[in-house]
Image (cartoon, helix red, strand yellow):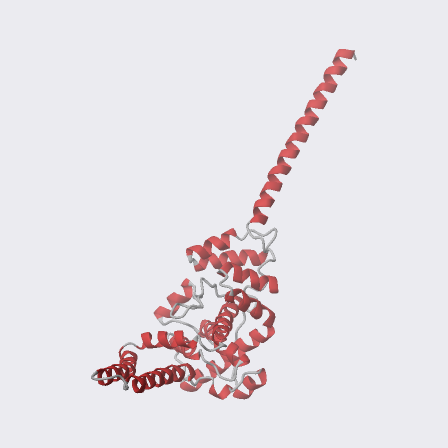
Length: 329
């Protein structure tokens, strides 16, 4: 072979190698760039793309949230999502609740009047004291001012009878003076959030603010069943456990439960929308069993619950709350 031919062959081989190496480097750069974008999507979950979940939460699309979490569970990230899918009701006694650690189990369904009594006592006491104080004013002021101040208590009672929601908002705002109030709310709502997550019910939002919606966790399919009054026993059991989770969380921590009224109202709404209808004894047993099941989940997942309480207390987003659960697990 001539020297010119050999030179041409080597030149061709060298250019092909350069081209192949350049293509390889380009593919590597594209791959590295893609991996970087995926990692950048969530600093708390390296190598996992949470953009689909974030988008679904932003749109308040429960079906999309569930689908995104199912996909994350398949790749091994959302390990706690729907990790307790099997819920089966059974006969439950008060002794079992006490054994679990629920304090004053026999009084769980009795609404607490601590905050209401404290608010009304403060209003009456304050207006009474001001009435006596202003009665020392000279002239007609000593008559009219105490009369006006004293009427404040009557106005409060009138507002409560005409618009109970306004009175409850005022009581809720006043209750913030109790040292345990904010911690109670966070523990209560975190329990609803966590238990729903473990049972596979998608969470769309939450709030710890007074007078606003708290945990929003009902998906579209369940909403249709509720509105149509066609909840079957299986779905009723799941919703009952979620509804009683906040009550169970308070019962495990405190001697008296403060936030059970809304939970019991939600449970009764679910019961009224179920088929077949439950007798009074069956409703009572359902309530006890749901508290027991929710309390057991919270005790067995105490680390997850505490991590979620911490995240919610810092006003974390729903996505950040989910990340807190998975990181703690």
